[in-house]
Picture 1 (cartoon, rainbow, N blue to C red):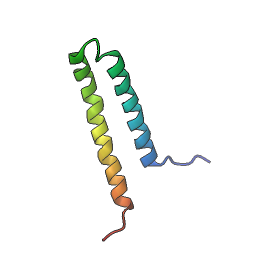
Picture 2 (picture 1 turned 60 degrees about the vertical axis):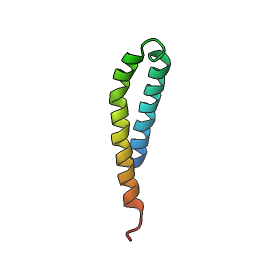
Picture 3 (picture 1 turned 90 degrees about the horizontal axis):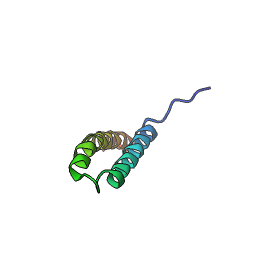
Picture 4 (picture 1 turned 60 degrees about the horizontal axis):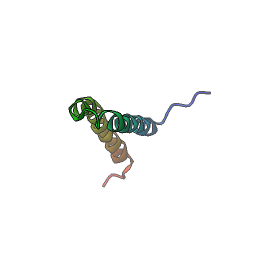
Amino acid sequence: MIEEPNPLRVTLQQMQRLLCALDNLKEEVLPKNPQLFAVMAEAPLEDLDRLRQEVEGFLDQLQPAV
């Protein structure tokens, strides 16, 4: 039986992968070419913000209605 993935867990895993990619860019690209780093980091940072908003949506659903 295949279990459906937990969407919150999947989103957090995606965020972790983006953070690892940004960390690699910071180590490899930033010291050599800060302008290139800024350009390359822009999309992952936008994706992280979008995923953060998704997480906030998941958490809002977990909170009891007032």
